[in-house]
Each structure stands twice: as C-alpha cells, then as structure tokens.
Image (cartoon, rainbow, N blue to C red; front, top):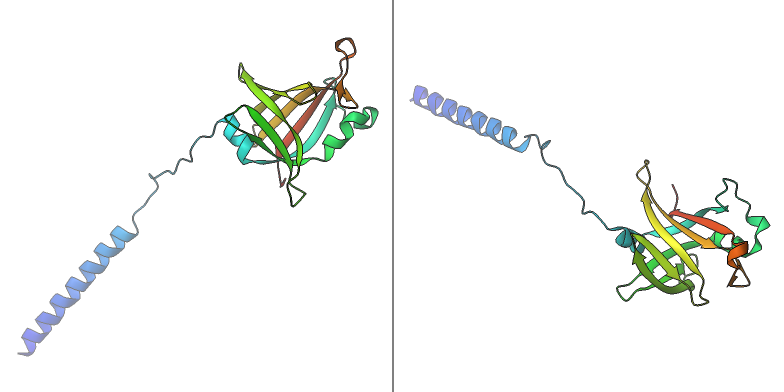
Length: 171
C-alpha cells in the first residue's frame, strides 16, 4: 500500500513538473518576431494632428535670424500653434497658449506638386512643406513674402521669410 502511495505521489510530482515546464515554455516564449508597425500618416495628417512651435525665422534664405530687422515678422517668432487643414481646402492656425485657442491665421490652401500653397484673407500667400528630419522629427516649414502692415511687399522688393515650426512642446 505504501508503495502504491509513493507511486501515485511520484506520478503527481512528475505530472506537476511536466505541466510547470510546459507552462513556462509557452508563457516565456520569445516574441522577438512580432513587430508593431504604427500607421503611416500623410504630411497633411501630421500637420493637423501636431502642435507646432515656431522655432526659427530666416530672412532671404540667410542663416542668421534677423527678425528685428523686419518688424512684420516679429510676432510669428513666438507662435505656438495647432495647424488644421480640412477637406474643404481651408486652414487655420490656432494659438495653443490661449485656453480659448483663438485663431492666429486662416485662409485657403491648395496642393501643387506636393507643396501646399496657403492663401491668407489679405491675398498674401505662403508655401508650406513637411520634411522628416534625420533625427526623426517632422519639420513644418512656411516660406512667405515679408508683409508691411499685412500687405505683401511688391515683387521687385520681395523679401522671403522662412518660418520653421517643430513639434511642441520641444523636448
């Protein structure tokens, strides 16, 4: 009888060890082959789903930030904004520092050769592009003519202001 009990105990012990080993091998299996691929966003989706901060303003393609020489551009250097584009061909930049999210700029846009051409209510235009930098950060760039009191400078005196926005908050 004692031998029978020992045999049963051994069977239970072996069965328990087998079940434990099986459980550990299944639950601890490597998931190295599983990759989660995030959905790819279009530039328009990135623009509309990201909060942007103006980080640099360049005048006439220069590398120096000479905003003070061009008073009409000073206000954009402090923008923190959300850019929104709709299927109706309109855009709006909202101030994210303001709890109300007041509009800073709005107008119409069209897509030509992968570049968005923004047209503001006063008739001035800007070219907007989305670039993925080597660092993995998306950069939203606007190139626009300098304006004096909201009116674009005449073409013969054109001053191009390049405004660069990066995702906000910056880290």
